[in-house]
Structure formats: structure tokens, C-alpha cells
Length: 134
Image (cartoon, rainbow, N blue to C red; front, side, top):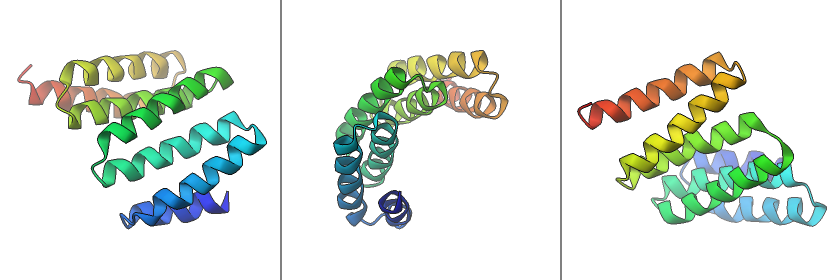
């Protein structure tokens, strides 16, 4: 948990050392067999890679996290992953994939009655559609 917090502060500063910190934490969660911890750290790694413009790596990490969140039954985490996938696909100039991810995110947040998350996701989808002129 301490490594996660250190990595988050490094990510905020766009410090490439965040990658190393999160990779250490990821190894520890994997060693313990903690899928939820692994999924959480993969998302933090992805955030660091997004800031460093390494979008293909971030995409892979978010997809891994999404799979793990499904295994452990974490619907909020799945929604977070789908939202982040929408962001990454938008940055990769793939609006169709971004839209699909955001629509899945909205569906999950609607089912979970997550009003704050739903508002945020709906806003992101609206912004995406506006950039497409729709």
C-alpha cells in the first residue's frame, strides 16, 4: 500500500520513477495472489503510462485490470477501467472504441446506481460525441 501511495505521488508529478514503484507493488500483489490489489496497481501503472504518452502500454494494462476486476466481481473497478479505456481510445483517435467503452461504463454504473460515476461517464461520452460533431 505504501508503494501505491508513493507511485501515485510520483504520477502526479509525471515522474517516470512511478513506473518502477508501481512495478514493485505489482510484483508484491502477484506474489501474494491478491487479484484486487493487482488490478488496482495495473490501473495506476496505466495512468503513469498515459502521462508519459505510452498509450499502447496503458491500453494493455487497463485491459488486464478490467479482466481481473471481472474475476473478483468488482463492478466499480470494471466501470473505472472502461472509463479509462474510453480515454485511451480517444487519445489514440479511435472514437468508435472510445464510445463503446464509455457506453459499457454507463451501463455498469446505471446498474450499480452510481449516480456520480454515471454523471461523469455520461459527460465524457457527450464530450466525445461533440468532438465528432454529433
